Image (tube, rainbow, N blue to C red; front, side, top):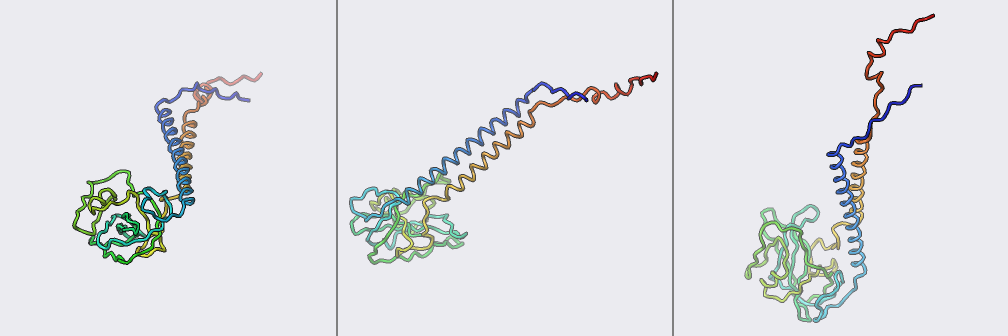
Length: 257
């Protein structure tokens, strides 16, 4: 029986090994971050589900986020803010934000839903009831963006409606000369005075997608670790007879007695 080939001493290839370790650490960190994002989404969805139903009062400065608020009053029929770059079913459009004068006194800013915008970027006609309305709406914070591209919107005080890229309640309040509350309302689908796209969601997508992303990052980390192990493991030496075939062929044959 032939003896097994000896194993070469392990000599790590340092540059690819270090690169692999960096990638593995990065992928694991991204996977853990996605798991934490999934937990955050669960907490937000649970908070929205447990939010109370409230009736607006004049002294209500900061109602609980995601609460369903009942409020009575009138829309401002002239002044509207159109938040650009809102897509519904593949169509470009705007969200219509209109100030609402409550019977209790304060002014609130309400997102009334989505309207399409023409290809030539002409603004849509905004039909607004002038009668007193009893509305139901969800309390929320004003929409935010991670990074603003381009300059700040410059609102005029005498031109309405106005198209904006980013929603700034303080700026809108100054341009309209109205003491708007810093939080906003999202008009419920069953309430009058609204438009399409009022199936509001408290999150862009649920925790399942984050779990899917986490699985992808962890799988990449495992793949890099496996490939690195296979490439870095010690190799067996080939036998001297295989490496030097002439040695065995030049050996004189044994004599027969």
